[in-house]
View (tube, rainbow, N blue to C red):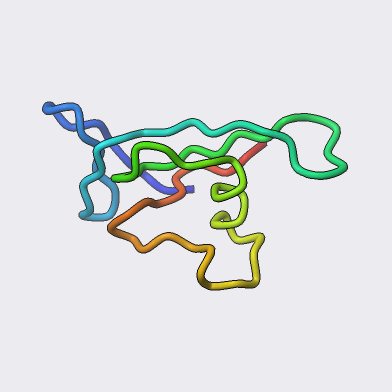
Length: 78
């Protein structure tokens, strides 16, 4: 979905923004047959599965989305 890379200092870069963490957040959506995994680059150390799926584009509430300086979704679930 987005091109990103790990920097020599261990941070992550995507679209000119630098992030401290690469998070793999897994869980199961309601009525889903299998778990989903969301990959975020983030300056927030801990993102819950609920926050991840809502911010992935599934929420109609704009308050559920991250500011680009906080986190960015780089890979969608399968």
